[in-house]
Image (cartoon, rainbow, N blue to C red; front, side):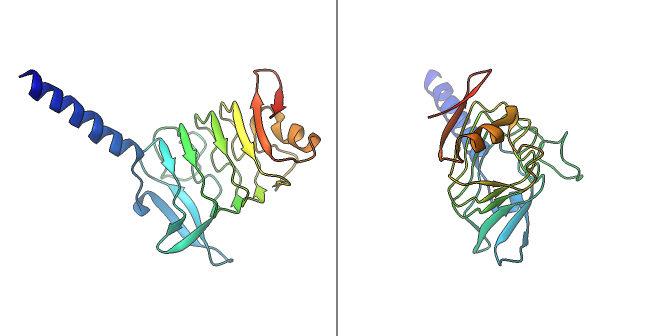
Length: 176
């Protein structure tokens, strides 16, 4: 009996773990953009830990669209993912992250690949970010509204737009 219970527990954790991380192309609404790449326009999956694919339907994912991964309270469309994201991996094929793309989630850490050259207003705000890795010379679409919480854009610009990991102490940003 103990062996059967152990097997059931292991199977349950394994099966639930697969569900939590699984993404298929069906989890994303997409459109082809003017540059010939794919724009993810909406994430409709259930996973809270998301790995954005490098390609969908054999075409490179180059843009994360406006509010594509925003939580339900920030999404203006009727279809959205139900639970806030706690983790996201952005592939090095992405060059642009649009306005409010990840707004209203529970992301504490994120890495922006060096392929990204443009980030829209409030792309990651509000999120409880404490660590974010940024490439050099990143541009912000609408500079008047920071894409990051706690005025990270101002600090990044003041640091000469240098690549690095920026950490929030609860009061101040620092670059490592």
